[in-house]
Image (cartoon, rainbow, N blue to C red; front, side, top):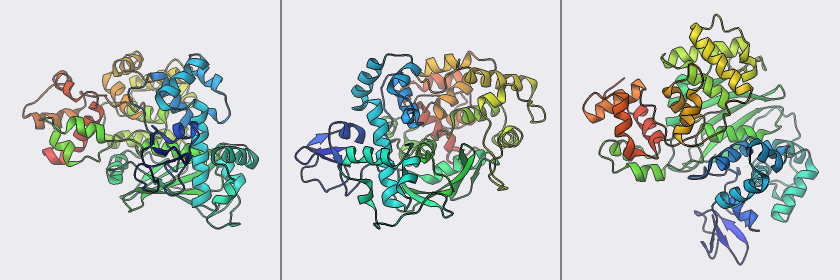
Length: 463
């Protein structure tokens, strides 16, 4: 983000509206607004309020950012966030400002005001509905927040002044979500399509659909490529938009929208083994997850069975143990929570007794807090933490680090597909241990290499 110190306006680096671009550089929009700058009205930088992933930050920053993105500060304080992270309030604020340029509350409010601005400019939702959609209690709180941030009322942003739609509308809300380029929506769809949980998700050749809910009120989000080289198009079908900001954040995470492949491409492109793969497809992303517990269960289910079989079993879990929240035959269920699975009857779902025990031990650890699915750290620390649970081995821990914790340096070297494709590139059959040894030059981007190797079947002649 570039700022004009004379006008106190900050702007996206691609926007040419500033007379003196680059006068001040900010790591993100929240930092610019924390410094007293207001966003450019031409490019409306980071309109959805996304904060790009932070590299080389301590785990407390990564975990705090995950919780903020989930809406933790919508109804709780910074002090509560610090307690959740087991650190002092002073340390949390100091560390967040050092690495992100803004305090936890400033980051949270930035997300809310930016998303409110998008809803005001791209939809006809009324102000009370927008307030609830961004995690606020009502219109007055929204007006106070936006006036403080911008110096004017949100009503002045309307495309058609006076035109608005109250809550409980039947037509979908449509939003554009800008991604970091280069980007391939098709690559993400190709990964998600065979893994979509029946009843919860639906993936076609051109779209992703998912049912979610707030307090039992369902809504369906549909994602497509906007075909403009810059955005994905999201349609929200439902009669309730409360905390829609959190669902949009989950979509951004699942589709790795804010992640920047440039550093990984630069680091890996000259490698003699994977350099060609990386340079041919610089847009490859590491797909993450919608919900960390749901994604973790799916990974555990996938231990030593095919993707197709794991998808079938995941659908059985959703159908038998998930809450029915809609009558739609294709999308009707929410995935069960950790508490739901702790004492659930898992018979008839296709599990061995050992796998049942693994799932229930895992669910219990998540439910009682002994395994924190937001806690990051080094790849070695993550693996040690996860492998301490019965039935969880290195493959599960490494894939979870990639998908659930958004770690860039995981290497599930025992994965058959990865080893097979790596062996084809090396020209010899290699073991998991040998792949671990050979992957050292790829650090700290081994997750990206792993994804390239998973995607490489058609390039190296494997299935």
